Length: 378
Image (tube, rainbow, N blue to C red; front, side, top):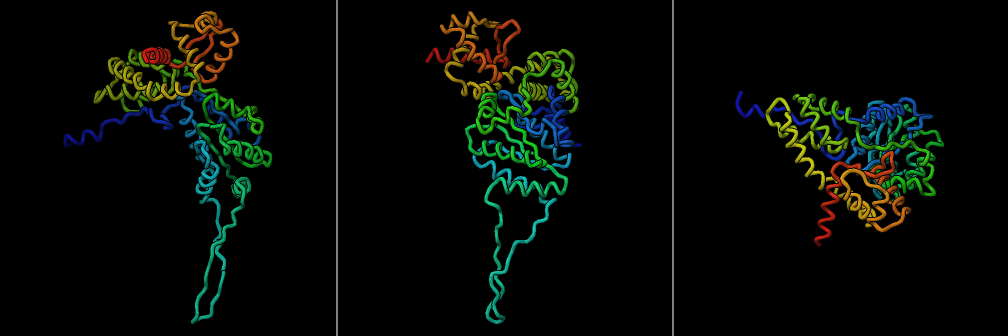
């Protein structure tokens, strides 16, 4: 074998720090996947038919939607995957019709518009578009045809935006589909404050009764097991010390799981085993990348009061007490309650059993400290 051929046999990196890509193992999400999967077997009265996935940036919302879409297709359903936008209704229709082409026979809708005498002319044709005017009727017709084939439709919407008119139309129309006993499911994912805004709307309030899954941190034991399995799925091994260091660096954060794994694997290069040194190198790179890939986006969506609250919290090494935050911010307890609630809903901080606050995103405290230094020097 030529030397250049060795690269062909080099094990590919099994970790997936790419937006929306499905990882080999879903650490900490197996129970959710098992529960949701039952929708495609018995959808009629299943409370998970309409499900909201809520989480901060980097908690794996998009990858989970993608994975559930594949499960739906494997169960004989068709799937329309969209990101919230002004034209998403048309995109859902187009995707659904394309996916259903093998199930639904479409008649040739050409009609004769003219007939000329031989020697003078020939037959002329036109194509008539009988598509109903409303999206609801168009989709109802499609769902009716799918039901005849015992097939359901899953609609997944990522990056929920409550300010879009199309978002409201989708949700209200879906409610009609349910009332009409259509075989359709709706899964949506978004940031906590956007999901909360959506379910608070007058015309979308029925979503308060939808199933809701909070995608938070992954338990350490699941991180350890999934990390080891992912490494082994790529054809390498990892020792216990390296595995423990990786779990400490990841701190249960799904995106960091993939990023630490990816960089550690690359650091191991042609070695058949990932060592502690490889993981230390990978974790260092991953932490640096986390700021630009996740934290910058998270920080940009915060209000000035949110930022001030977090900067005040960052002065503490472990937990922050309400009384200390009141003193630093020169604000009453009611102010702390409002912004504590906002930041918890966004998955940025969490409240301890004793009523103190701490950062929920690994490394975000250090990031906030850096932002505070930069703003102070401007």
